[in-house]
Image (cartoon, rainbow, N blue to C red; front, side, top):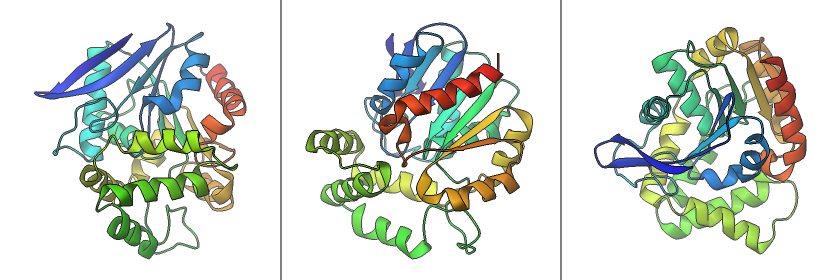
Length: 271
């Protein structure tokens, strides 16, 4: 089923709902769409009710100049779950989609969650302790990305292209694959992307990351390129969580079979 759910007057989110059983809800990252999870939908809808969402101002959802922050995204998620009458889902966020999961926990707690899978996102993006903390990058580098790229459509194209080729996958992308990724991102206008970028970078969800892992089953899947920092950081912040390392930032797409194996092992423990 493909549908649109109104989360406030004039703002609809595009949602796909496939299969039956225990519920998995996939939330894409910064400016990406339901399309990135097509392999997960095909695989998991055979055994689970599998839901994917285009967040506000992403993909086929309404483009709006307000609410482009993760506090609003967390509230939007709750409205989608209510509209679909979903109980006890496992929420699965990728990249900035993890911020939506943590914001949901901040606002609504974990009582109605069965578990969470957090794909390759630190709970606090920026830190002065860059040699000890798992962060998105150095402050100057993040500021340069915002200032130099997210000011016009070409800059956004260049930013996503560079990120896709250098961080998201571990092999060379074909022209068709790169175009597919960039075109998804460009459905979000650059001026909205800039708002989302700054909202994400200045978020701090360490408290929710710690408490969530204490209250519900939690799996982190982190990319190989920063696993030496991410794993000890998570072991200290969220020691109850399971932590697996795989591929690049988009490992669930590039190494989907191995990712599905990790997910299935986690899901088996929840049955």
